[in-house]
Length: 515
Image 1 (cartoon, helix red, strand yellow):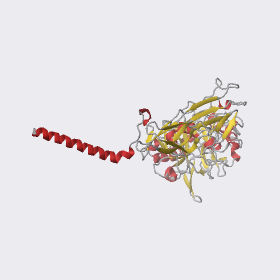
Image 2 (cartoon, rainbow, N blue to C red; image 1 turned 180 degrees about the vertical axis):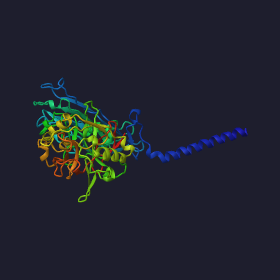
Image 3 (spheres, rainbow, N blue to C red; image 1 turned 45 degrees about the vertical axis):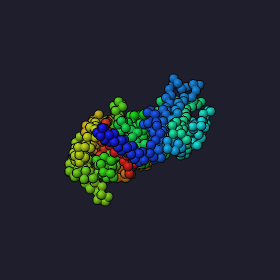
Image 4 (cartoon, rainbow, N blue to C red; image 1 turned 180 degrees about the horizontal axis):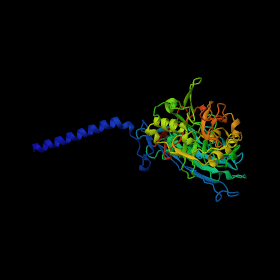
């Protein structure tokens, strides 16, 4: 009996101890206990410090796909609708909760453009009470076209807050209060020719969230894409935006008929955001490691795009060496080089710029980690006659240098120099009809105000090659390549599987790369 009595007492003590522990746990965690949330929404719920729960349910991404089958005169508008929602559930301690949130959109890519003066892509927004929202905290313009009212997002990209600090409250700790919004995207059928938007694309997210809506980092948007895909799909939006022009031969801007027609995406203008840090992982990119993107190229037209880089500033002897063909211009401390130091020969395969300075010294200074990001390239080095380069407009230079050189000579290696046409197409389109020998580098980010070699030779003799003059015009080394030293900037193509790690492409925040 005594033994049974003792066991009963121990059992009672154990129950009391467990009860005390439970009370202590409850005391310390009660303020964080949230409402019960159904399994399908738990992953989207956020519990506040007061124990309230706010749940955001994302709607479908909106999209419009116009074709001659579904969009033509008299066919009517094309539209798509989604209904994102936010739900607030009070803590079961208070049964009351007040919060606020933001409503808006993130447009990652938008190639819809204006065929006339009217808005064509309109976003209509209704709040939880089905009231039309007519003002935007990020100044989207509210318009009405052919009976459709909403925000004009034709050609727009970026993050746009439509409602800021929108209030929501509840007196329920079970069902809570739900706000359901309606976002309707409409491609308006106009009385004008809208064929320019036949194959237009839109990548847009509708967003309800607690904090102000901002664009996600480009690297996040481009996760799973190659760097080339990232630039052409998420940085290029329409010709001229972000300094990029698509050379498909179908542009509608001034001098678009002068495009290269090679389906390249080329950076143009005075100072586009096309910087890359290459050869260094330092938090602040050293000047010697700053490069810029000339463009994105697909020479085989197989959608296997490669990004072409050029050093942002002139390379010096620390990278290129002083082997035989080196000279220094003391007046401005720019290291300059002969094409060949001991022979009058303008064949690129025999140039010491190529074999010694670029593809030996510079290449070895990169190190294996960075070498692995660079593609072996067939450089077009046949060149052409004097009048076909020197006295030509940029499109003719491209044709005579790349498409139909005087001699079909190529040279396979990793490092080269810029083509004369690379330089010409880096200026804005209004200059594309100017003869390159009298062009003075206005609005051209590749123009640095000192003479530098191109990879393009004169095919009429074996002693001359073309260079960019200090005045920004394409010039010819009229005496032989042994007698004229100029600056140079290494240029190369990245492998197709290179990806974006981080960065925005600005001088202060250049793109960083990974495999």
